[in-house]
Amino acid sequence: MSRNLLDHRAAGVLLHLISLPNEAGIGDMGPCAYEFVDFLVRARQRFWQILPLNPTLRESSHNAYSNTSAYAGNPLLISIEALVDDGLLTSSDLSPAPAGTDGLIDYDAVSTHKLTMLTRAWQRFESHGALEALTEFEQQHAHWLPDFALFAALREQMPGRRWSDWPEPLRDRHPDAIEEARSSLAPQIRREVFIQWLFYRQWQKLKRYANDQGLAILGDIPIYVDLESAEVWTSPDCFLLDEHRKPQFISGAPPDAFSADGQVWEHPCFHWGRLRDRGFDWWLQRIDHNLRLFDLTRIDHFRGFAAYWEIPAAVGHASAGKWVPAPGHELFEAVRERHPDMPFFAEDLGVITDDVHALKHQFSLPGMYVLMFAFSDDLTHNAYLPHNHAEHGVVYTGTHDTNTARGWFEDDANDHERSQFGHYIWRGVTNESAARDMVELAMRSRANTAIIPLQDWLDLGTEARVNRPYNKIGNYRWRLVDGHITDALADHIAEWTAATGRCG
Image 1 (cartoon, helix red, strand yellow):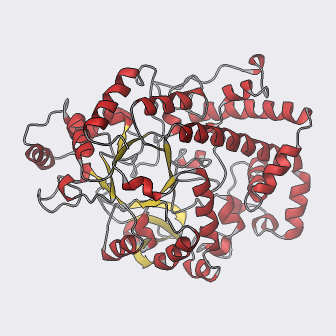
Image 2 (cartoon, one colour; image 1 turned 120 degrees about the vertical axis):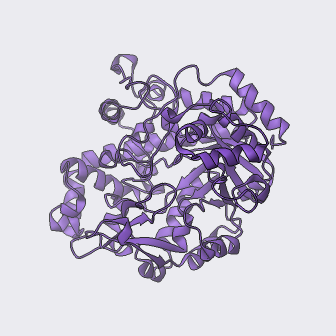
């Protein structure tokens, strides 16, 4: 599949895997995911948009955009039910999964439960001597998997310590120390390879099931990687680090609609000069990998490829940052040489300046229109208003970073925005109608592609918000409950999809 998927009028739903309802305590790649694919097909949707699938960090409250690897899959998304079906576990192996609290994910309980089950599956797999499958898998992913597996094993051996605080020979990857670690931690490394093998088997099967029914998967490639990731450990020269492997500058954003004080994301900033000297190989491998995982990829924080907000790590306040140019033109020229169809679209939100527009237009990348941003200015020129949307674009009511449509109207919008919303649709908007009215605007937009968070089809409020970018705790915990996903809802979505000419 390629970006021409966005050239035809169609619709999709945004819902991350973790939010699917099941009895495992967290949504995963098991039966709940297949049932959701069936739901989307019945609803006549063309796209299922998800968030990054990489392993998350407890230290970052399992933020989907802070990962221990840009390549590895998140073990929490592996279905334990599917392992029983595969014969790697038996029903008697299973212990009750954590239920969570009020439908929210209890990450500590879920992590303990899944790791116990995955270790048990590994022991059975290892006892059967079927290791040749792992060897083949490791060879297929040789550019990242051996280093990630070693990194994960070392983190397990030294819990609570950042890799930059490891003994210097391991921190700086002295060959003798690395060889010794590979030898002494061989059993743990093989288990990590096994877990990744499980993840990729389950993901490929799920994606094939979706594609066979005409459903495309929209993935997401975060612009940054976490300091506590295998990629920073293995390629420190690609980042602005000091001699002790600590960040000199960290990522963030200036004050904007999300935060009056700006945001500090704490990822290490790239050393773009060295990335350029390497022919952008670090980025090209990462993009290649994502295009094997997904049918289309959203480029997170696209404006950071034109210029990024660089914050001195020693200060740590967003207000101390500055804009620094990035060689996005050169990078995407290299990407286009490998992928002439450029199967991406740009998350061009935030402080968007002329250089960002120029970069997007040079490579004909579709951008995003978020309707919650449409009513703060006049009702003529705001780019987010539906009458200003280009066909070559993707419209949303909101994203994983915003409130739900109802929550925005009830809790976030000011009187001026509520009034403008009503003026624009020529009728009064209420708490009860806000989500329906905004979904209608998105579906009727001139933009070819409309992506609606499932929460807005369900008319859920702030309680169903996924992430608050200005708040570092309590995010990425919301889940659907039984009874949310119904045939009646699918038929309702299908009716709207057909009525607005979005059946693909």
